[in-house]
Image 1 (tube, rainbow, N blue to C red):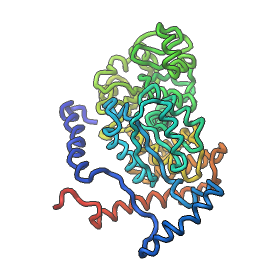
Image 2 (spheres, rainbow, N blue to C red; image 1 turned 60 degrees about the vertical axis):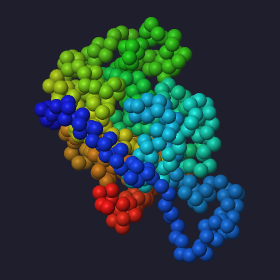
Image 3 (tube, helix red, strand yellow; image 1 turned 90 degrees about the vertical axis):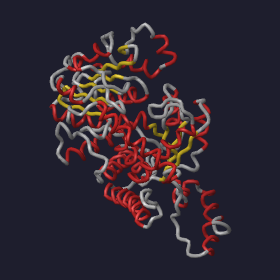
Image 4 (cartoon, helix red, strand yellow; image 1 turned 180 degrees about the vertical axis):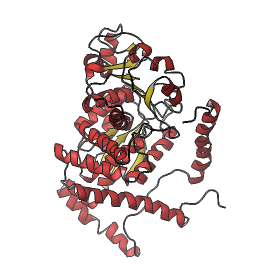
Length: 451
């Protein structure tokens, strides 16, 4: 972690992917498409794959809709649904402008998890209509990934769909960020020799990610009485001046007001950090959002997760100099990257393989524990608390943990032994990666630098 690197150099490095993206997106005209799974030996095979032969599997599915999982690709289809109202850090840029992000998500699903994901960007902002649309998509898809939907409606949409759908619904901005954050924290606490049920935790940022992180931390064992959550107006508490607005417009925040901060502590971010063992910030891009002098007021062996992109709320070396023992960010060029891509591909792989009806908090925690275990098996230290995305074993292991937890909880349609689940996941993921490499080798995915 070289603190001699200047802000200008970091910004220049951060801007390079955008320059490359503007060159390569029009070259490929998108990142995902449709490829065939079946053989076409001659045009006579069309009679099998389409009319008249296709009528036979249609009638079988008509008699038993569950057979759609056996006779179609429903069990590996995931819809990546967005209304374009909160795209990355760009805000409400609309559904067309959201497409590159949703295609990118589909690419990660396929390459990392072997999941066939499709971007579905909606020209619709009404949460109840979005709920209606997603519910209507259920016959085609084995699962749905909600993405980049603005707060607070994202909570209503997710909670309603999870309660009313027969297929798993996932909001990566909430559950994905929370899962990977919990995974990193599990190992960070091992290094500093502190117990999750005893540590004092402050979560700065009460948007979709911050609230979901607080919720999952509590489910994972953090004592809510030892937790503070902070939004732009200060520490959440039952006695805040805007409590009526919180109760009516921001029910998820009000729920945290009721569960956390039993002493009704008041104040700003600086006040919330005093004495904390753990600071998790998912707020505004920095630097300077979290100040070094605030870190100095934290407990000994403090843990700081500054997850804002493209610049963390505080530079890692500043946090370390101020007393933090372990620092994580959302960036790949610093140690301990909290990256959602470590979560959703493996989680959905396991979910789809056992045909789970939902993704529970316990399944997310199982994924977090397995992520932490992968890193631990490779030797955790202060600059390695969570696996890297290029560690192959992350995704099939995560799939097994999630699938077995779904079976244990009775939300899976199939009971598959752990060793068989691992082989299924490993084979599916390897096939997806090898297909891409083969297409590149044969020139079907062209090299933009070769004319």
